[in-house]
Structure formats: C-alpha cells, structure tokens
Image (cartoon, rainbow, N blue to C red; front, side, top):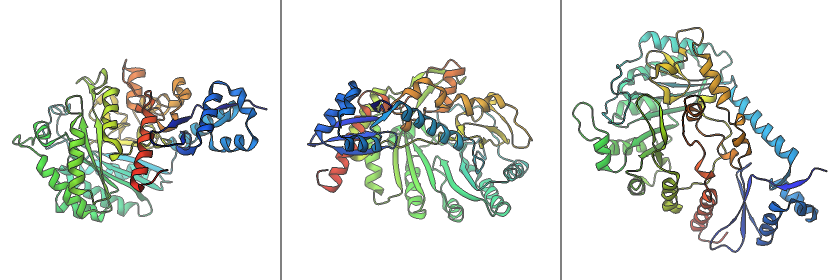
Length: 445
C-alpha cells in the first residue's frame, strides 16, 4: 500500500478568538473547521508521516476525501490532472479571446506613460474588415471574448460601434461570452451608455491614481493639463446607475509614494456608492521598468508594504484565495491583442512594442511563431520545478506570463510569485476571512 503523508497543499490554522482550529486545502480552495486535537495530530503527522496509519480508518478516509492526507501517486496524479486541464484550456478551439485597441491616442498626459512619443493611429475601415475576416477563420467558434483597450478606446467610439454591429451581423450564432472595457472614465457620456445598453458589458475597469490631489497631478488632460478626478468620479456614478448589470471595477494605482492612499479612497467610494453591488475597488500594484522595456528590478512596492496594506484593510476587503486553473489570456493559443494598425500581440503589456508583434490581422500566417511558442510552452508553470513543488500552485498557477518570459529570456529579475507564498500571508488572509464571516453574521463559527 502507498505510504500516506500530509499533503503540502493543506494549511492548519489557529484563529484568535476561536476555540477550534481550521484546515485550508488549496487543491480545492476549501476551508474546514476541525478540532484542536485533530489539528495537533495533523501537525505531528506532517513531521512523522508513519503515524498516519495509526489513525482510525474513518478519520483517514475523511481526511483523504478532503485532500488533507494523500499518497505520492495521488499527488503526482493531481499535478498531471491540473496540467492537463490547463493545457486543454490553453489549446481550446471553442473560444476566441480578442483584445482590440481601436486607437493608440489618449486624452490624458500621464508622466509615466511610455506611449507619449509614439505616432497616433486609429483603426481603418480595412483593418476593421480584416478583423471580421479573421474571426470568420474560426469555424468552430462558440464563444467570443471581447475587450476594448487603448490608448483610450472611447476616443474611437465610432470604431467600437462599427465593429460590434459587424460582429452581430456576420456571426449571429457566436455569442459574445465576455465583454470588457478598459477606460480612464473621462469620456463616458450618454452616447457611450446607449451603445453599451445595446451591447451589454460584463465589466468596466476605470483607473484612479490615488486621492484627488495626486490623481490630478498625474492624470491631466492632454489639451490643457487640467485635472480629471472630479469628472471621472461623476462618470462612475453615471455608469453605476445606467448599467446596473455591468460590474464596475475601480483600480487604484499604488506605488511606494501613495500606498497609504488606498484605504482613504476606497472608503470614500464605498461611502458614496456602497449600495451598488456591482462596484469593486481594488489596489493596482505598479511595477518598475525603463523606457527600453528592460527590467529595473522588482515591484515598486516591496511585498512587506503590500502585506501591510492588506492587513490594514482588515475585513473591509476579502483576500480569500481564488483557484487559478485557466492561466492568463496570453497563454491561450487563440488569444490576441490587435492594435490600431492590425498588428497582433499575445499580451496587453506589449502593445506598441514592435519586437513583440506576432503578425498582422491582414496576413494568413504569423510572423513571430517563436514568441507564440514561448507563451504557450515556456510560460507554462508546469515547466518550472519550483512551481510544481509549491504548496500554493492551485491558487497561483505561476503568476504573470509576461514577466515570467522576461525573467527567462530578457535577464529579468521580477518577483512573479504570489503574495500568498510569503511566510504567514495565506494564514493571515484566511484568518481575516474567517473573522469577516463571523462579524457579518454576529455569531461564532
């Protein structure tokens, strides 16, 4: 019989204020209340796996069903299964994931933007026609995932409208399974609302650069350098009322200079619109790179800074993990970012970088198959021995593919590991989640 041992994918937690212990298992992202005696036994068996066989059979069976104890064969088979699921998803032909940048133009003058001196371009009628022809090549297409990106995509609203109507008329049997807009929020108006009532959005992402004074210093209008915060805030309110079935995600950009802004701005937004269940406010941690697209180091915030931010938010934000089985869009074979000239990329971060163009939507084949292979195979976390041994693999799946490739092929030094890997972080986040559940129902668990 195969030897039992305590799975590396489980965590045993003691939470302040609770008389029992908790068992978290990352393979299925489950959380279980257990007795202190069982917790002590599991901790003992972690270092002395031979003691597992002395447990009552029903306890062993129960712990096996939860995934807390396992065998080498079962754990290896689990890794094969999630790798197979990952690859099936990555190479699936049932869906096409398109991110379209209808223009490279932006109405903001942000000092940190690398696109500032690049020529302005908008999608031509021919490029729009080529996009429709490109979609038509996917004969077995069942689902289309569509994201609008930029530049500022709402500067090309007529192009967005043209593409949406052409997709509807040419592909009546292909459902837009996910419809997403990334915008700075300044240009939202009745015309925008009307279009996205006709073609509903699942989600809109709007970015703020912190509190009003900082945001207005960094995100100025290009035409007159005036602040943009007040109008964006007004427009968030408009879209929340007008599109109640669309999730509105407010990303607050953070670096070492404004990490303390997030609780303040989140509180203001929640106080203003907290009744809307489709509103989400989250921190966006900025990374540092130079203008030549080289790595300068790691994140602009140290993990310790991010940890402190999360902990200070307490139960106001839920940082309970999420299973990450599908990878990012860049690791899907049929996922592309199409720029305003029809040029194609694998990752959003590469827009405007000529060295990362993989082809053009007008062509019959790809011009940079090497980069495609890197995203599909080298960025695969199952090729990384450290990832395969990691206890949080199911809730991380290797991190950002773009930065993984930078580390592998461009002498990068980016930390792509999940924050949950830092000592004590996963336990703290789960503890905060448990406390939040308890506070929300005003009872013990």
